[in-house]
Image (cartoon, rainbow, N blue to C red; front, top):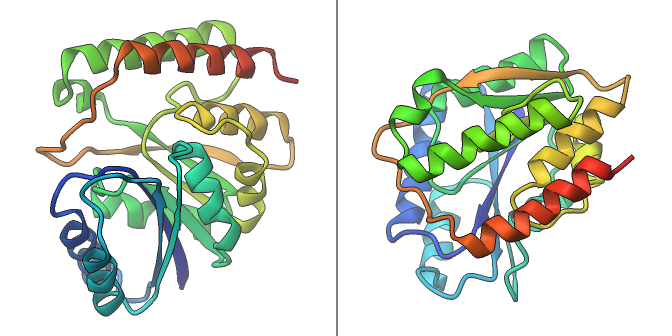
Length: 234
């Protein structure tokens, strides 16, 4: 079973390449039938990324496709760049630190395959908010409230960092236009408007000791503008 996993990369924490290798090996231990290609998209990183990391990944991963460009464009842009080369029957994207359990990633592929689902959206388990900084939990809950109140979409938890696609579902991802974080919400709204796209949620569980990037006011102002774009898009 061929699978492409897209990993956007921007100024990752030290040791990130080792973590990718460990998660890759764990997935294959649990699901040896998988043939996994890692598509790593270096989104204009300016620290903690060098050629030694790419050489290490190239030696350790039987199928490895790096993409690099500058300057930084944002997570949505990076994942679309990866989607352009993803040709496996099932395509997933997650964060570079593989923050969700490998068992959930495997279950997502199985749902795509067995249930013939087009897009599977990882929604965060109820205990997620016990393991994240208070400010980040508040932002996440407020966004969910705004989505539930203002948008007519099937899934209100848009920002979980694990999503899976059939090739049919991947066409919706490729049609998104937001370059930063709220491309996920744009994806869900677009998919909700397509009656022939089967969009389903799946509960996913955060690993312990995940390190969260800070969310500053500048990011919040920008993403509020992106929320308005999604709100008024047709």
